[in-house]
Length: 209
Image 1 (cartoon, rainbow, N blue to C red):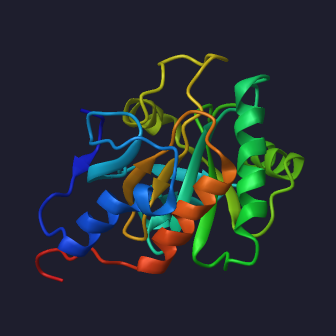
Image 2: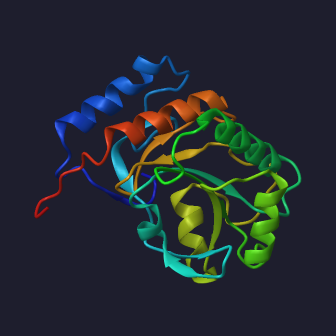
């Protein structure tokens, strides 16, 4: 199973039904999936790794705290990548356009570096500028001590390689991984899922809430 803690306890019926029916309702070309598979709804959802990330402003923050409160599309990248990563970033740029006027306060696009030694805050800023990132599209890198956990969670090789997955990972307002796209997904389809996740709001009910 992929890294990360599962959250089967406390899941509402409404969210289960939502994940089961979202792809069919939107007519998406995405395959059903569970935590053992690669594409489509992640059932049960996975809690993101408990790591520290550094923003383009040089601020250290909890990755989980950063994700909570917004629906997020995560693209893994490293700025030295000359082939796949620019294609992925161009896809996010098209997702940004497809989202139109949807509030940036509710939906975030996130470029997550897997090369923190190279991808300093200034380098990440330049990456965002290169692809026309607007408000709501940010970039972070993990601290070096947490890099292995990021690579393990997202099934990335222990070394940087140009030929890698182009999957976009979608996270709900509760900071849970709920969807994985196909490789090189259609930007409009990614935008549709983000908007639907935005509209349902936080349905997760945990014991003690």
